[in-house]
Image (cartoon, rainbow, N blue to C red):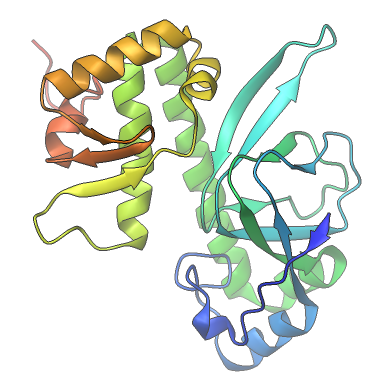
Amino acid sequence: MNQSLIEYKECSDCPIRHRAVCARCEGEELDHLESIKYYRSYTAGQSMIWAGDRMDFVASVIEGVATLSQTMEDGRTQMVGLLLPSDFIGRPGRDIAPYHVTAISDVTVCCFRKKPFEELLVTTPQIGQRLLEMALDELDAAREWMLLLGRKTAREKISSLIAIIARRDTELKALLPSGEVSVVLPLTREAMADYLGLTLETVSRQISALKKDGIIQLEGKRKVIIPDLETLMEETGDDTDGGPLY
């Protein structure tokens, strides 16, 4: 792995400062984190972690997107998750990585030496509480993906993936002045097909159908403009209001 050339001088300058595991830390707590952190960067397509690797660090994604995947004995591979900015890599108390982590864009991560970080969890409740919140959010996301992969139609799957990325992106950025949401899809259409259990032709057809219906607009291969996020959410098939279905 390559040491990052990017050096954030202060945690207060970090673009994920208020969403990461250190979100509630101040003063001496931040100073302590500063003393055990370092940065690493990866280029698109580079393996960050292999399943079975011994983990001597945990980390937060600062920039870029990575995939979590698992390979079966016969070589079949399944993507099981996306790591977006502010997501946490690694697990305190677990020494071996259970998944492959691969950069699908240029990625920068803020790493913490694992043993000092585990000791900090004991003395700094704010970090443990934030990590618990993030773990529960990840559990909710995993359940959402179970529904997506198991029960949704192809159109609902594509809409859901775009909506998930758009929601995360707008949490970190403000809406455009027009109220539109503009996102760059981190996955190629081939990767989307693999991730969603669809064919490449089906992915392309459904994206074209969403464009034709005015749900999304496309600029280039990956930039998606969503005129109205609520309209896109209606295409996901989710029961967002909790009311009866007819």
